[in-house]
Length: 84
View 1 (cartoon, rainbow, N blue to C red):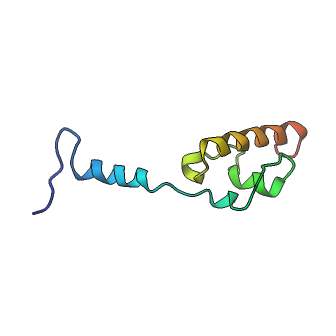
View 2: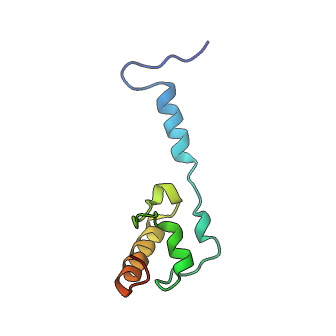
View 3: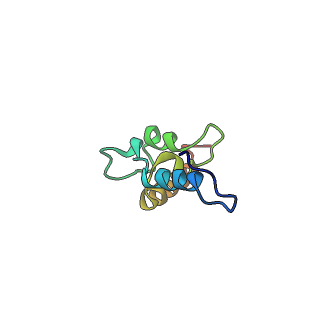
């Protein structure tokens, strides 16, 4: 028998979201990287959109600690003039 969606918000949709949360992304851009340097433009530009906005960790798969390092590096790179 197929599962019906609960009108109060439970049901199959809720289970699907829970399953998605369990399958976290891996930070594909950070494999083998020990430290994020603000002068490493090739690495930093992977985490910034073409408009200069920092891509959130939920999209890149970076952990909160890695995301803080990315944020710090991007801001420093902007400050020293590597990025606009």
